[in-house]
Length: 316
Image (cartoon, rainbow, N blue to C red; front, side, top):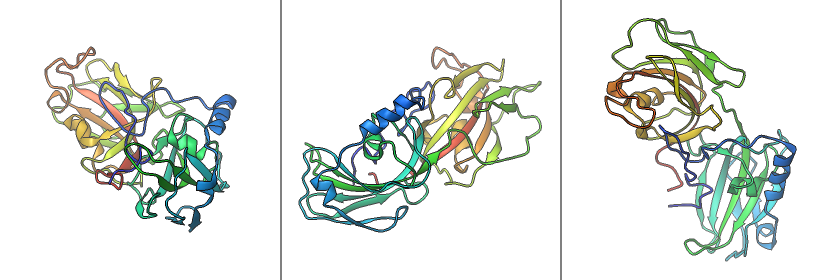
């Protein structure tokens, strides 16, 4: 089944190398007083429809909702059930959340997603997204009921949503010992990597080293992975692409990447940081691919894995 864009992978991220869902690909809004105010203003108001929904269960666990059917709000209505007592969230942050959805016309449960690892990617919070409209300027632990009106393509729906936490935009796993002969990596205060190429010839096969080992969901073939990355040329150490340069984390299925990059992601856990050296045969080959022209280049990436969503999920 397909739920509304709140749950579905939607907003496409633009990058020379990668494509994604649940990330804008544009610069993240800077948390500020104005941004916080906009997030508060974005929160949808409650109404008779959302107020009528009875919910059982604790925050952080799948909810059970009951309501008289059909439920038919004219606009999105949101009722706060629990304000949450965790840290305040700010515009531009990535959040983890979970939800249970119901058919508003019949009361039938549609899906429960986000309470188990690998079910939903983190999403960037802003006043322009559904997440911003349902959670507003809330706190971790917030639970809301959202009643959605019918549209031309879908009937009315009721969601119970939990704001589970914020997600770091750099890998948070345990540092590992560097691998001799591999490029060296130095991290800025915000986690952005700089890469130094060692002397000598480039390897002829893809080489992978785990710089930080996470303990989250394990990325499998075809899964979506929310990542930060920097890519440099082995030939001169120059950066040709980076999400850290005024952008934001992005997410694509692993199968959308070149073979060497795919190998670096699959089998890694969320929270990990991976260093990969990719020769042309598993990179961009001998052809001109874009204005950067990586023809025949051995390329090096440092990739931070921030979230994962299984290829088969309740959103379809």
